[in-house]
Image 1 (spheres, one colour):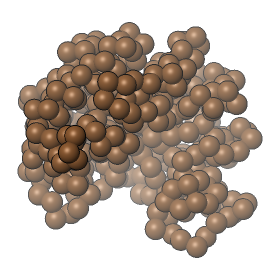
Image 2: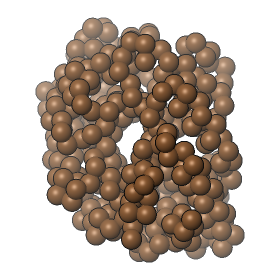
Image 3: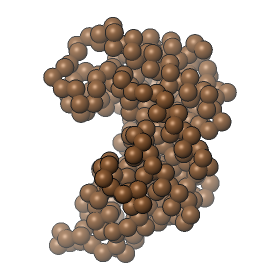
Image 4: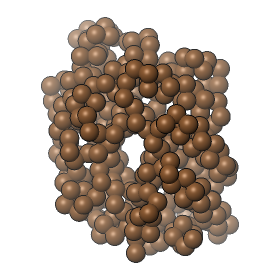
Length: 329
């Protein structure tokens, strides 16, 4: 029946893909999902590598695939401190530019990209990962200070402007803030404060919980995050779901074949996660896996290069035990 059909009364189910994955796994995408996200092809460096130069070819391939197969298209992402060319933040002499120049460049980029896909992309991760991971950073000013956006502006105004620019470009698009470690209590509170501030000055419709977990994750923290962010009146998307079989800080371990006990733990956790998601279907409208199958997961190269097995489909596209758990309820 496929994941999207099984969950049609709950929420959309999607996958992050790229043109190569579409070429090799297009039939699996069409049979299982009703939503897609560009893995990297809509990020700043991919579509706008130099000032005045846009390269939409790869992003267009994903969008055209979505349109041809009646799949919803999520946009990811407009403002992020990573995978963005230095030219955005600097002048010809290599020093940081002034904030008005940055805002002008941001507006031109956001307007061009969002207008190009207006009516095709139904929602955007407008700002990605702006909040600091440091516990000592204050709740009332929670931004990561290593971001060049912050270096130039010295404030949260760039987030406000990003959401307003996106809204001006496509008033019909749903606009999201997206981040990881949203289940960490300290970071969760900082994100909550930031979103409350943004909502007072710009249209923000939802939050994307990236949901990069491992098999030791406490699923109850997900429920707490859903409660906190839904209380702000925000729609919730699970945007980058995967469950690593390794702890994030686990090194020196690389399983050529995934151990049965860890795969059982993965299936159990996926079962718990989807039970929580189903229970909160009035607050959650979309769930996206970060990748199509284990063979193309980003976790095969991060945080170290090794085989990982974080998704519902194995390297050959066959459903795993975790798939059986989330589809039988």
